[in-house]
Image 1 (cartoon, rainbow, N blue to C red):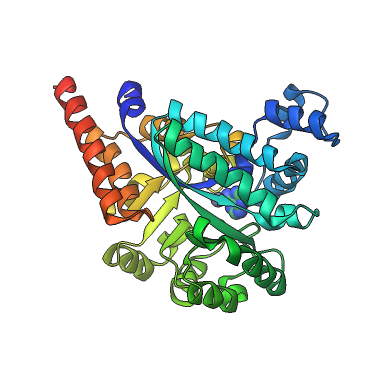
Image 2: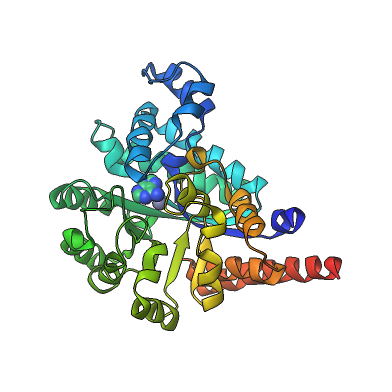
Length: 339
Ligand code: ADE
Ligand code: ZN
């Protein structure tokens, strides 16, 4: 199973670039930029990454991001993640970034996006990894701050495919950002939103109806509303599920209790993603392996996660056909070897 998962081409649709900051780079950037961090050693960092819920993680995650100052820092962060994609055979990735985490500290919007974008462009040439960029609004901040961020993004609209919504879910419902999302849609951006991670199923339905999202990030609490599950199946609404994240943040007690395989078998367009891999103990292969180990799955079912991700991705029809051909070729080879 390990060899099959390693060889299977993968598509990632739910990845926060700030969540890929590994302790080694955290220390290097802290030194380079003379920023103090609340850890003495990499071992101490590991001990601090024990979370009780989403907020306990976010508090540490925003502190870590303080070491990102210069365009080169954003490039280095993104490039390190793309090298991990190459290791895990991730051939296409759609990346979130949180500009407000940085602009609130006085970092220019251009510094952030130019660093990230330069790494993505280089990966297309040097690593044959294609990508899209999604700008998230921090939902614990207010509507006015989100509108300011949308304005800052307009000169860079060619680099951003969609806007999203992340950070503290409970108490920050989708309706808080309905007008901002209307503005983003009018500017030609697609929309996505984190919903139903810790928040109730109604946040999923309201993200669909009020924010007009093309995908739901997480969405695992949809099962609390059977009518919503039927709607997700009928409309093939993609859910970008993050298994290891959900265990670390205690959305589920164990991987055996995670509902991702149940959702897949019901016919939902579920995908596997790594969310914040530097904090949750694994990149794409680790997430696939953890799901496959806890649920008995056959290779075709595992490959279905990749086909769902191609269907759910924001690439062109032509690019989707290219990705499907890559996966089909590899899959028939792997299945022949297995027989
Ligand atoms: N920001 C980074 N990771 C997140 C998650 N899992 N949920 C909400 N906001 C986030
Ligand atoms: Zn997320």
